[in-house]
Image (cartoon, rainbow, N blue to C red; front, top):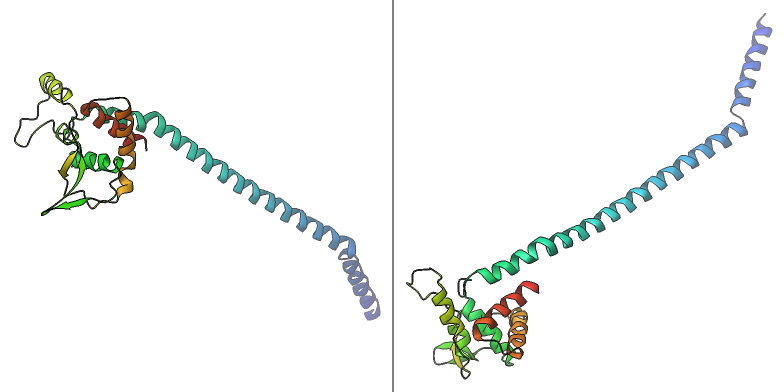
Length: 198
């Protein structure tokens, strides 16, 4: 009786060993390899999808800026009265001096300044300090009638120390306006447009 029981156990053990034979192991290894390949493919797809979405997001951002922000900036550059942008007269004067080749501001007595046509500085004051800020057709016409004079020293102590490369776009705009023989009034607007574009 006990001998028969031992033979039966040996028979079941043999069957278990055959179930775990080389064929089963090869199949398991093959399935594991296929699952790893699928996982790698999913990772590559996810990475490619993120890259495409990021590139598309950049394209959409540039497109939105071109269609909305840029026209709005140019519109406000035209609508805001001259001189109502903080320190605009001195910034425009600094750009004008850069166009003339003055990289660094000069000093005269206690003041820092540059060489520029004073009409460009003067036209950039739509409202004098203390004036009532009401833009009228007469005031605009008076600014448009300002003519070019001769370059001279213009005090710009508050912007004299600024890095000159900041004024390159404005200088380009002023240069284009001078080539077109524009008035000082239109030249300031051209400098604004150049700053908006660059």
